[in-house]
Image (cartoon, rainbow, N blue to C red; front, side, top):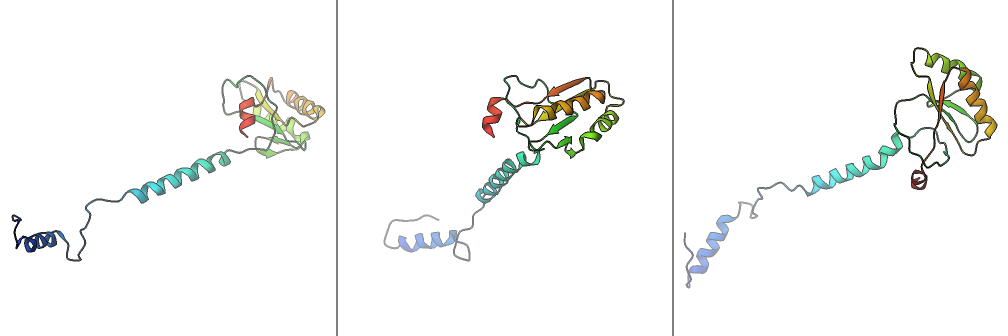
Length: 156
């Protein structure tokens, strides 16, 4: 169908234009609008980025700062002492008197007898030595002292 340029051409052009319309009067789109999908995905990404650090939070301990990096993070036996002097084995609170027996039980059958100590920098030195003494009596051969790097401390 050709559209002419004449006096009667206006009627043909409107007839041609009305042929492109749907029965409801608006042209339907053949594409999916993905903008709302992108918005939802970005919101989910933001939620996971905010909540992920909270999922791996342990005992609240303010660690001292040192300049050396930890060579290899691994699954390890960790003893923590918070600012109030409470002792934790892993994430579980434990009395200092029971620490020796619990460590001895966990170290049986383990080749390397290594444990790590996370002590708050504000804790009294005597309390740290008491915990180290219990760990040594339990059979721990090597005690690793956990610390933070200056840039990690500044990021908190």
